[in-house]
Image (cartoon, rainbow, N blue to C red; front, side, top):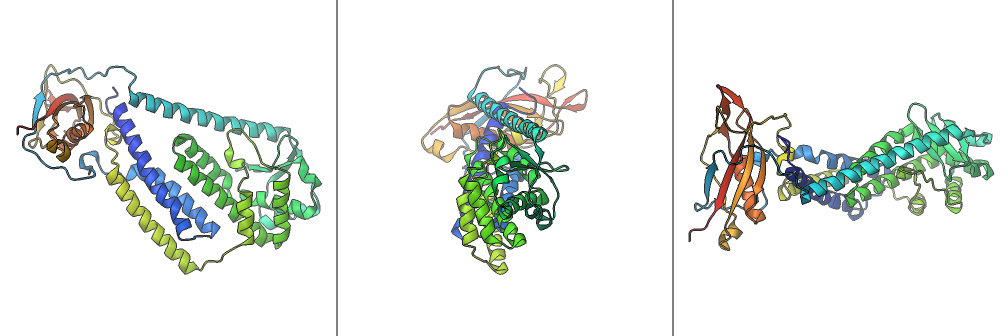
Length: 429
């Protein structure tokens, strides 16, 4: 076992995080439709803010020892606790393929595959850029540079089916050979759209979002959120193209040309180049519904309050218990043996007997491995022998997280140690 981290604790924390994120995303994805938020720029900022909020959830968790569990826990005097001096003091963990390990392995392998797939896409882009040639477009199409206020290399490739824009310091707009067959006004709209992506530095956001997709690939709500971000980004650029070129009809014709020719970029590992949602984009351009600034401000404030409340409820309902969010400081515990003086509890152990189990007279015994650091703080709790009841195991872990000690010492100096404890839940009535 890693001294400061256990697979069981990490799996429990990851599961709790997934449930918290699902609750926040479920509410967050519903709110714009419920309140009819239609402004694409505000929607884009809202979706991106929601993504950042999801990533910040682990930082908002209370300390393990102060974690509040859902429901009320009733203190029962019939619970007994006994210290196991010298019980299995080696501090080693049996190397078995538990469900927790298999879950973490599957998630880790999935993330590695997604990141490798992303790397393959980036390599594919370099290959396409290397083989492409400079685009020779009409003077009307080159007016898109002035329209967008951005500069990038325009290249043509027979190996792509749709326009691609990538790069930060040296941005490239890669156009399909079929664009040469379009009329100049349509070319202008397509090039202006891609150059606005360059101006907005959407490439950086896209890479960040794909990295998030790779790490949280197992969460379907995250995929839904990323799809909303992609659609809103395209809608923002669509509206900006119409505003800068002054020709809605010509730009709608450009979108129609893209759709009719099935121009959809297909770069392995880079799904943000899939220019989908054409139907929604066209409908949005044809049916713009203006919203006042006061209404937008009130909706954003309402959304922020509801999401903050949802996040708090999610944290309380699905606490990220376990060792994964314990103290990040490296701890090197040693077995409690030899000349090491054991830690001393600063207060009596208080263990809460879960009300349901007490009522049903469910008894059990939980043996846990506890890591106590040099400050006497519990930084790791791992159940070594379960009672067979999840609520009893959780109550025992909660009691241990709340406990504080005078640290163990060796020759008068504090040391971090493994300590084993048995908590017995027994109803004497």
